[in-house]
Amino acid sequence: MTLVHDAIANLQQLSELFLKRREQLARSVGLTVQEWKVIEEINGEHFMPSLFAEERESSRAAVSKILRQLMDKGLISVTISPENGRRRDYTLTAEGEKVIKHLREARADAIAAIWSQFPEEDLTRFINFTRTLTGKLEAYSNHQE
Image (cartoon, rainbow, N blue to C red; front, side):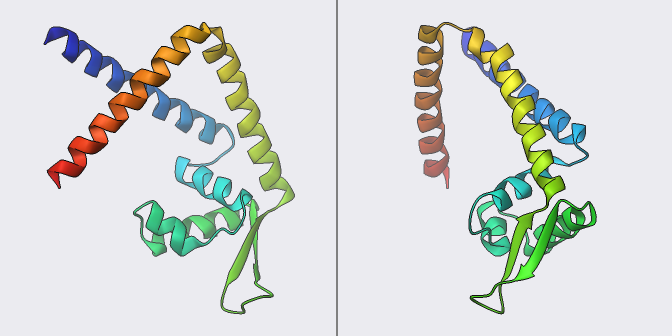
């Protein structure tokens, strides 16, 4: 069991480091992780705050607050949808586009510095292991509900 506990401890440490790095990246451009997630979604197509809240198991009020913060920072703009006057369309401003570009470049730099250093066979084994582990964790979690 010691090996299993060591594996779990390493996975927890890895997870914490990913979260810490994401927080560092967000802070580097004056954002929270939650704000970053929202501008990433807005950068995609058809952002809907209510759907975003539902997918993230968050409240609509919390998402509305983040949207106001992003507008106050000048990173997004909002207009009334020409197709449906009850819907609002959110888009990144030029400053918001710069922030996304910076975040993506910083992330790509980290990937190049860390992940690209591993041999392909190590990455393939890691992918296969994590895919299997994820499946087992999901099945166990669903069984417990």
